[in-house]
Length: 279
Image 1 (cartoon, rainbow, N blue to C red):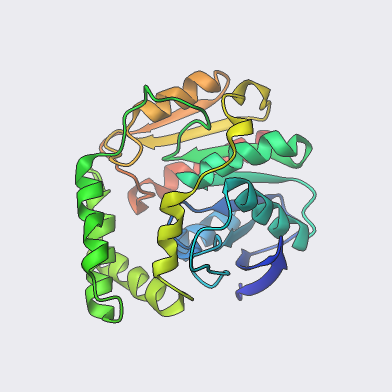
Image 2: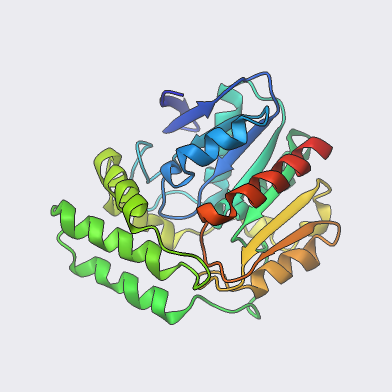
C-alpha cells in the first residue's frame, strides 16, 4: 500500500495500490484541484476487500505528482497519464471510477482505447459534451474560492481552514459534515503537496474537443452516482449522463452534495462491485 512515483507521459505520477494485482482492477480518478487522498484510505480498503485491485493516483499539479508554474497540458494529457498508470502496473483492462473531472477524463479514455475499459462509474460528474444548456456552478462555490487570491499560502493553519471550508461549501444538507476527518485530510494534503498553488491550473484546463458529444460510441456498462444538492455540477448534469447512457444505472443521492460522503460508502461500494462483477 506504499506510495510509488512512476514516470509516464513525460511526468511523474504518484500512485498507491490496495490488495491483489491479480484481481479485477478499479482505477480511482479524482477531480480537479484534489489529490488522491480524497479517495479515503478506508474507502479504498473496503472496495479492495471485495476482491478488487484498487489504484488511486495524484493527477499532475496536485499531491506528489509533477507540478507546473503555468498550465502547459490539457485533459487529453491527463487521460494519457491515467493510461500510463495502468501500463506501469501491467493492467490490460480496467474499470474506471471517476469523481467530477475524473469522470469526464474516464469518458475520454473509453473513447480513446475502448478495448481497455471495462466499465465507467461516474460520481458527481457530467457528460463530456458541449452542453451550454446545463446549469453552471452555484455562485456560492465561486464566491468562496475567490478567497484564494488573498490567502497567505505559507500559513498552514490559514490554508487548512480555507480547504476545510471549501469542502464544507460543497456538501449537501442531508449529510453531516465531518470537520475532524476533513481537517486531517486537509493537513495531509498540505504536507504532501509539491505545490499547493499549482492545483489552480486545473481551473484553466481545456482540450479534448474532438471527443465532445460522442457518448453513444461508449459501449461499456455505466454507473452514475450523483447528489441532488451538488453545487459544482448540479443534478441536471446527472440527468444528462443518464440521457447519454440510456443503458446506464443512475443512483440518486438525496441531500448529498459534490462529495463521496461516508454515509454513502456502503451503497456506492455495493453498486461498484455489482457493476464490476457483471462487466
